Image 1 (cartoon, rainbow, N blue to C red):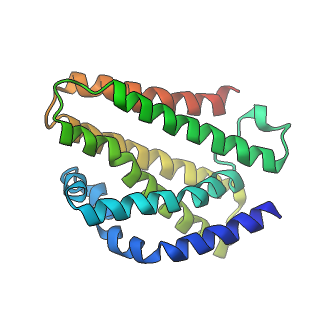
Image 2: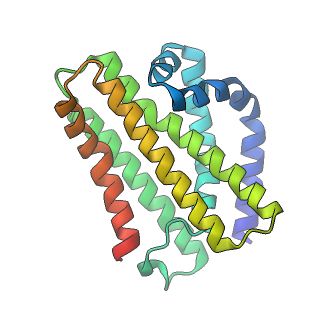
Length: 206
């Protein structure tokens, strides 16, 4: 019941964001290809605002995909009912976002230009939007062909890993445009690699 209600809410939210999606989608796709496109996106007030709105609108659909497709299903959640699992997924994701926001404020490399730094920090919104849209499309297409659930989950995890690697590469390229590779690597470890690694490890170990 909860799944149906939330899916309906997601549908209305996406209908609301449809015009924004059409406007920013070409820029989002371009960011997959070149790091410079992320800089161009941030330089446009209209595009960056649209991207931010879209990333917020895609949060609920993302949680639903993770929950329904069991993309994050550590063993400690086995004893929880479906609704509580959904709440735990949201809680873990929001904790990760809040932690990143806090670290972004206190760990800015002194050698990085402030505008470049802001662009790098907001890159996650671009790739989060891209990832969610791709996962939604995959889920829809594979459902049409009655693809087994475990195959869908495996494919989504591999695609998520691929998008994440592209995200890390683009973010590194942005940071190294005004800072050393070593400083950029330390920043990425603190804000991306270690937190994300902890989440992945929790799914595997626990």
